[in-house]
Length: 159
Image (cartoon, rainbow, N blue to C red; front, side, top):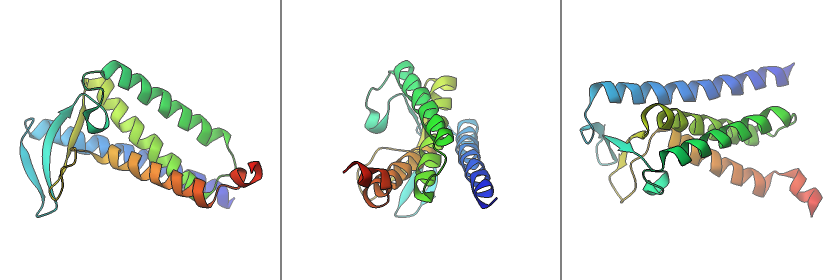
């Protein structure tokens, strides 16, 4: 019974991340012009509306079709793994939720608009502008790495 509620929690968390990402992006698109700075956290980050046709660090810029396909395949693969693998460590569950949500959030942008809406610009070092989905992907990848290094029992069986 306890696992059932935990599974429902993870599904709700995934939906919440996707909805938050979509809502913020829609708000930005409807209220600001591309390149417009519209606030931020003083000394930390500016909020600026950027249309990104590439992936991380603008790699594959203009390759929306390819990036859309990669996002869709990745989202489906994560979803299948998430559903098929029954007994999952909570850190792996978190990683899957974050990776799936982030990939879906950016895939929707690429399919609907042919670009991804980015808006967070770090002030204290030169870093690409990013969004909520990007944060989820990076945090999910970090959680997955930590899981593999410290908690993956299958890895220990293989060795």
